[in-house]
Image (tube, rainbow over all chains, first blue to last red):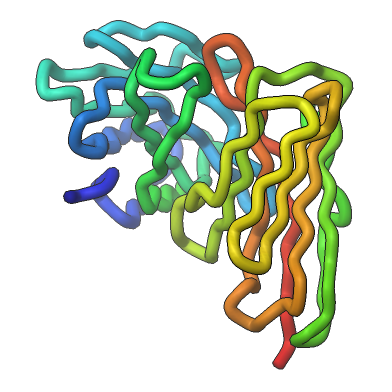
Length: 115
Length: 109
């Protein structure tokens, strides 16, 4: 049973560019959440997708957008990259409504470096 | 300001020692999770606690959820070098998960 997978593992971009990160959820999961983890910090919630729609959003600007596909996989897009966007981007999947608590499983992350 | 405050921020101990790390908040959570994260990898779920006062044991790890569901602790008995990592607590809000900044544990052989 494959867990959460993310691609690419590493990415280097320059300021002002755009980037797309990809995530495939764990088998049987239908909900995908994206997090940004800066060095030395805990993950910060970006947004969550369910049924191809954004359900919730954290305190991130509109430069961060996403998409969920019918097969539950998801993309995170970041436009007009800033140096401060350099971080580990984590995808987590869960099964909505399967339990009373939101148990998530994380992928290995994509390390984005903005120069 | 983090919604969840973890302490200590850093902890370095010798193999065989016991330790406790804490996760505190002024907010009430429906559940709280503990993760361990190694460098360059995603967090790995260790346990979820749901009921106030709940205690869960996972081998040498003991997790406790506060009675008011605002805080939690993780106790490790006889720490081993393999326990080294970043320990994160995360509280479940209505529709998202809030993480603390973590406790970075180093266990020296």
